[in-house]
Image 1 (cartoon, rainbow, N blue to C red):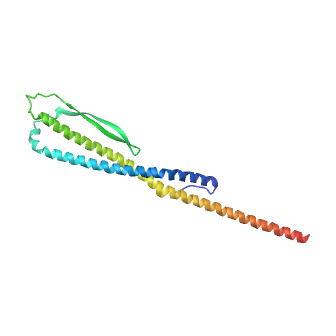
Image 2 (image 1 turned 60 degrees about the horizontal axis):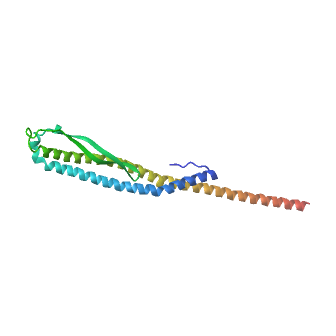
Length: 204
């Protein structure tokens, strides 16, 4: 990114101000990026653990496959998924608070006695599945925030701060050269004036 500037004091002051802003913000962005990186790793591990748990649970109930043909899946449904939010390194992230189910009343005389257990099994599987899905959505949000923060960190650290420093150095060198030229010009003018004055004195 090319830093636009002019070779004058006003431009120099503006660049120095912008540089200070970025240098002050840099430690905060670094700590935010680090916190998000850790949270992304933790959430990814959590999602993997939930997916593995769901697979284990499904496998553990495979022996009941034949019985499930008797079960009425409309007896249970998800009524509500309660969510809240919390801030993680300045990013608003969702938190899964509760999963509520609706269970339709059914006759114990007209249905097998294991239906109650079947409902508990489905609640458990659905809860783990919803939690895994939710954790996946949370992970994608955190990864997006982490990528943006990393981009901003790289922009400040590798592009803007070095760019501003280089531009400030160029202006300072130009102003120093200009000052040296002005002093040299004054010396030459003074020397010429002195020579003229000497010649005038000699002529007089």
